[in-house]
Length: 379
Ligand code: ASP
Image 1 (cartoon, helix red, strand yellow):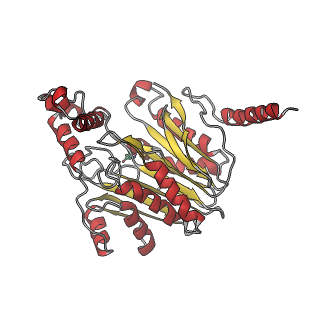
Image 2: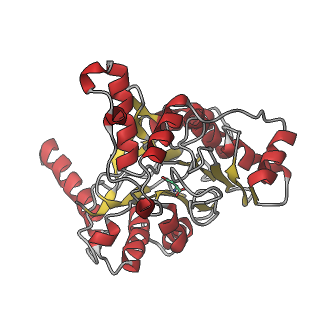
Image 3: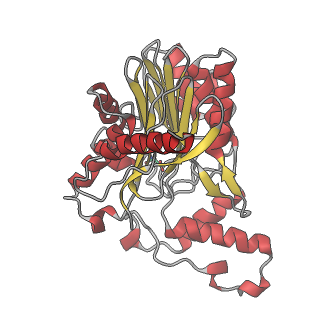
């Protein structure tokens, strides 16, 4: 048999395994990814590809997994690795969904949420509604390491962080402040609680013509208008399994933009935005946190893997539970999106998203690559 036909047979066999894994119930779900060969170590993260206020493409997920893999390869612990990975994105003012530069709540204050889990010690730590500290994932790690609590919130979380030596910093960047101001100027009470708070966004406040603007101002306006049209969510979730099969995970976010102060999403809730069991696998979520909380998303995904599902099937099953809450009504479901990412102890991984277009990043020890998530629906 020629080399070519062996390769083709092998490809078809692998594709068939992945395709068959996804039942077509309640949607048009498709397996966009070929079931990857398991290998360890492995690091996966949400893609966090976005456009900065100056129009540059920010590739946070790739930077995150590269850093985490570097630490694991040099013998480091998976928790140190994933936290160091997401710190890059928390520190980057160009990612407006996480840490410094994250979009603020309805009063213009940046409130951050994060959670961490460490497989070998079976422990967790989290913070919610934390202000002034740009690395909530580091504070969550200290909750795990230095307390017998799991979740600290608001002022208590801030005081804990300050006592641990963190510095108070303003997290609102000028670009995020301008976006918030524009949101406030356009606020229509009927839209205030919906997933999409604005129907219209005026370019340049409606007073300046485009011809009078510099390219930087145009890029900033486009960035702001995108934030107003599509109520921004965003978060980074990173999961790692080392060569021994030990794993850790982290999820960190500024949450839903323009939220009511004190609103907490899925990211800092163990079992929702993050869950892992060192004997089974790890899962995380990004997107509309309330929907993830309703189904205890990450826990559901890990329990699915415990019962033998592949990471991708486990994640897709959780997406289908979300859709089922709405009777699979596409109009209702079109108001939000939700992603799950999963990896098992062998190093198999997968992702699933409600609406087509979700991606995640995988570092398999050799290279980092962007992978398309399986989707339930396409628009
Ligand atoms: N899941 C986050 C939250 O609801 C936001 C996001 O991932 O976009 O707070």
